[in-house]
Amino acid sequence: MFWTVTLSLLQGFGKTLEIFVLTLLFALPLGLLLSFGSMSRVSPIKWLTKALIWVVRGTPLMLQLIVIFYGPGLIGTWAESLHSDNGFILWLATWRSFDRFVAVMVAFVINYACYFSEIYRGGIEAIPKGQYEAGQVLGMTKTQVFFKIVLLQVIKRIIPPMSNEIITLVKDTSLARIISVYEIIWAGQAFIKSDGLLWPLFYTGVFYLIFNGLLTLLFGYIEKKLDYFRG
Image (cartoon, rainbow, N blue to C red; front, top):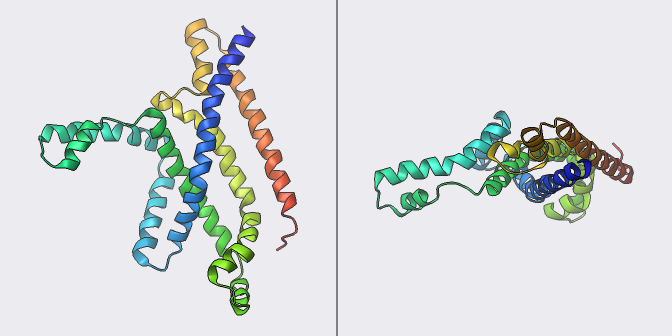
């Protein structure tokens, strides 16, 4: 029975890893773009970006999952009842809902990109202005200054808060089950209904602990490698 449970949990953990990796793959660069938007000198871009970040960070990820998954279907049903000839309305009517996994990815990427953007912004704004000015005096463009002088220092500063968010992401993947996406918690809970066994649900914690332990070691290693940046 132990091996049956383990194999089932490994299958669920595979989906957990998929959500985790894809979220990081898309949320990390999107978060950087949002941080630039929130620091933009163009007021409409700046305040629209800040408003998006405020809404996403101020509401639960569970609520965002539900809205993103069920919203298109509800809008489509309402639009279909209007019998409109408008092409966009008709398109909504045929799009009943997101695929469950796509909805999870959209919600997770947007949510974590907003959190990452604030971490990026804090790291960028913590770099002394004199370093930008010194680079420009040497004839470097703003882009060159950012990528050759500032970026590695920003990475050094944001590693601790970023590692906290990434470890939180590992645990947040369990929210995917809210819209019936099969992941490790779902796999563990299934044994309660089918066999009356509670221990597989607690066993899922071992997978989280091992994975988060490996991430903690990885981030510790990265911090040591960046120790040559002081101050």
